[in-house]
Image 1: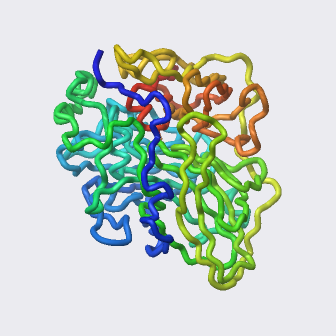
Image 2: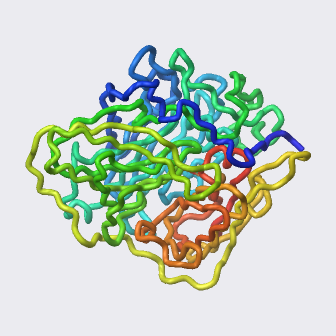
Image 3: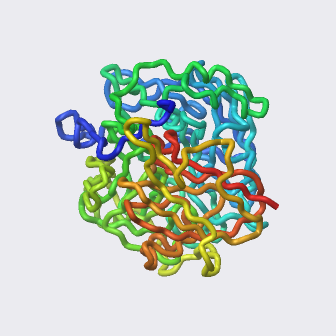
Length: 506
Ligand code: C2O
Ligand code: CU
């Protein structure tokens, strides 16, 4: 058995520097929040290259692999229903190899999905992805997507190195709602990293590529990728299989601040970490009003004291700073120990809002929201996906879906285009997983047999599954045929086998 899969059994999430990397002192929130530039043209270009990025307040910049020179990459912002082309060119160093970019949450053709082993972007090459931002002939709901690398076996490394950015789809129905806009609509990408003494990223642990014949390019449909065969040669992080950083960063910076007025702000929260989850609160006990999931608005706003976000989960929230001029409000994450799974949330202070001065504010959050249509109450379960740990210490263990590690040559389930599928997601392992399904946006039908909580009553693409949990989801498959992925979005689990393929057929 290859040593390709060596998942942590449980509880190896060890974080040093405890409180999110405070360097022992009180956090000063010295760096201003970086808001990535917005690109809104119908043909966007992203050059992937090695770039020095300001992540830590002192000392050197950090070498990262970026989309377009920043981490997060530019925020692409487009009206729903408007075709968007994104050309991605690969100028990364040799050890990076070929890349594949996935627009997480979006509905698009299979060859534009960022497949793990096909339609790759070889070094020196480029690929143009096409996103119509429509579903079944209609404009997509307003969304908060994100784009990131999806290369088989290397997704954790490539994301860690910085290949991540945000993508907002604007819906004209939302424009009428008087939600905060412009500088008061702030996308916030939360992600953890560890640094060397010279402020460089600690190289992430990853499988030894030299052992794996499947990565030598035979499935690459002409995009041969021989340089991947040599693998990643840098020193490895401590041998755990959880890519967890000691510092929590917001929009690529450690402990930044944002100066705001005492008005409403819309915060689009994304956890782009490989493995960590965050239970977000505001330091003065102020609630979040959650209006959306990332895949569209909720039926009604939900007032939440805290919001738990696992890898790749998003929350679209409004925060009210009225009457708080002069105050500093900190976005923080609190430990959460409600499940003994070794994947509890992180602790630490993330960023500071410096509320300074009143301003005119016409915004308000309506009592009901124009939520996207949900599929009809579904019938029988058409597919069950079990998430488990397989193998034993002697032969090696691996993360599996329905007992098998990912194999790009295998189709695990076939879906008829136009049909409604009802899937049961079941965690039969002893740790939490965050399960993501590509291509469609799903209605959460039930969680452990009960009605899902109010914040899961819109469209979703990533669900938390604690050990033993069962979630039923339903979606109708439209427009596109071909292979798509289902996987755990804890990237170490994904890279270590916990991914499967379903194919949509005419
Ligand atoms: Cu966010 Cu399959 O990915
Ligand atoms: Cu997992």
